[in-house]
Image 1 (cartoon, one colour):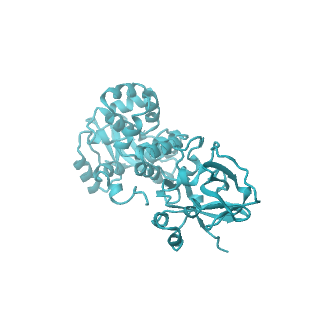
Image 2 (tube, helix red, strand yellow):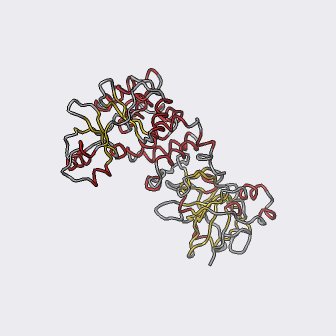
Image 3 (cartoon, one colour):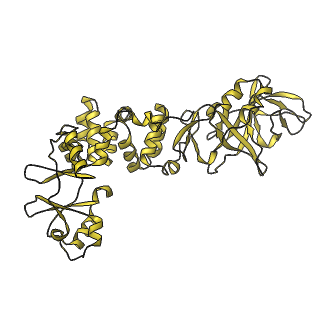
Length: 419
């Protein structure tokens, strides 16, 4: 059986009636207290009676309808409304504001908020982000009622922004945002206002690794924007968790007077990697490369190589290819982890590696890198010095990031809010 939907815009400013049907005031707002439930329960109303805003507990309401909200009994003895911690006012706090649709990884605007009576309890069931809600609020009530509901986004997939709400004492739950990929969260941040973006960043900050992954996906303007309000130590904490090449790019984008303090606040290991990368032009192989890779001697056995992969601190995406060096440390071959898994554990890397890998020098420009990776169908290209010793790895995603035009996500509707 379909639920009977009541629009928030129909309730706000509607008559408040006593038990005899006499008008005693009007409804100003609807109160909910979001918690662990998928559809928040309505806990009361804010009503204007005799020039004062009073609190109407939901148990005093016998009927919540478009034509008028009816109270139980004939007497009206209500207390002055004072917002309590954790409460949201649907009209004042959420109506016409951006919300996060976690399922679609999009921002939507709450042009209408929909309520329904579910098992004898009034609950928020969804949001209509279409223009119907806007039109309904502008028209006289008699005409507005003729406009049917639009497609409703289930509240179970919605998260509101609440940093602007007095005494809210809540933030966007990390558990919901954690369902999204870092790039999707970054898209949300870029589509949001600064205050909304800060709230998202604060939520993912509960997981430092996720926070770093999201920062890596942000465009440089937003990275600078959100680092500007952080102390040097806090900025360094964030950069310490990021990939060294991304951390180097971000430090290079900081104001001149902040670069050295932030760099010197990094842990020694990360600082050394970042300093090395900063010595190269950002659009050369040296500036694009990641210093995280695994290189092993060609005398290493397949079994020993797999043990080294398991023990490596390099990120998983950097371990799909193992680089092979000779006794003098020069790069002589590459081997994929898949090939290692299929090989005899007693074989050595010398016998299973592909010899003479295609390499680039650290001063190679973007066009030279793209041409070589395209000609040889490479997903990753090792960067070597004059002695053919490895310095880093340039991956195809590093190259694509530079080749894509600025603002391409917005141009293709990737970050636009659904209005």
